[in-house]
Length: 217
Image (cartoon, rainbow, N blue to C red; front, side, top):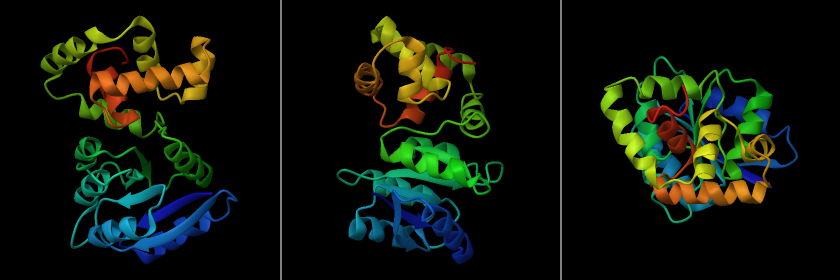
């Protein structure tokens, strides 16, 4: 059973998310929080597998709460809930350790899939949301960033680089295994090496590295 914590200052939004999540037999909502401070306390109290985190909340916003939660020992995955165009802080949330992004009007099936992927250590990099975010994130000072990013990739093996490309394209481990004709266990091993070599803490940061280096356009 995958446990989920809902952090949003709007009770109606939390109720809607709970309704969707509890239609699935393998997901359970174990707590709710109406602001960032309450979210941190709820994580410590309930130890959820996944947190759905709104960015715009009183007292302590979702960005600061995400950073604090990700510093916890064995922290939960944090999926940021955003309206995209209005939430420029979403880019800083990447560095704070957010696993991925969902628009608040995301179809229920995609919401359920994103939570399951996050709980498994994966991320939902949908072309309609996260790749747009990554493109915007990498527009500033692209030439300097690209040179620096390419330098970081020199330590990667050919297969690690190939896996990084697929992560940048938004593919999950099972999809990468099929595309590159390797076992899923081998893909997971390469992903672990990518985390270590690139100093990343989640797959979104790996995807950003791929975009910055020009491996994916």
